[in-house]
Amino acid sequence: MMRHKDQLLEQRRDLPMIPLEKPYQRGWKRCFVLGEDVARSSSSAFYEGLLAKINTVQYNPEKSFKVKKRRKGKKVRVEKRQFLMEFSEWYWNDGRLKLTEVERTHFHLYEVSRENGKEKTFRYRFNEPWKYRLQVKPYLITEVKMVDEVLEQEIKFLNNHIEKHHLYPRISKLTGGAYHYWKWAGEDKACYLEAEKEALLQIKEAMEIKKEEQF
Image: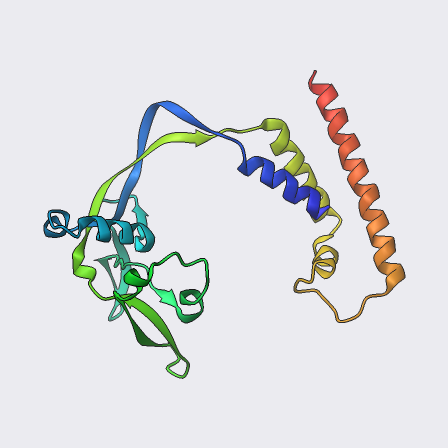
């Protein structure tokens, strides 16, 4: 059943984007860009390529990017801080991190303390953050995801069925989730899988009936 749900969600993700005839603004977008002096230098291509790998983006309904913080018992509005991307030791050594050897030389390892002050970890940080500056610009919506009404109905129908029959704990056991136990009774698992197949057939039949009613 969850496999079928994953297939439906994948179909939703694969739906194309539709351009809007009239784009509209939804707040503001803030990200890093090259500093003016760097953009004019001979190393601009290098730093621009690196920025594509360590840039971060924030969105806010207000151009000021201010948020409420409690200071000495009072709520005050302060600008939300934003930094370039940093990397954990694990991710630094993972093959998915596409930093070249030359780019890696522009980072240093530093120690980070947890809030409790007892646990410590290490992260890699860019050496020259002043090479970049923050830029704020309107966040324009120029396209939207296509919506398949029949697909949405099937996803909703499947979610309702799982919740109505309280199937999430059982599904979690089968997939090794939070409800997983070290041992399973073979008869119980086989019985559940058979019931799951039957439930899935019922859902498909119900969806077919709904489709026929629409026409």
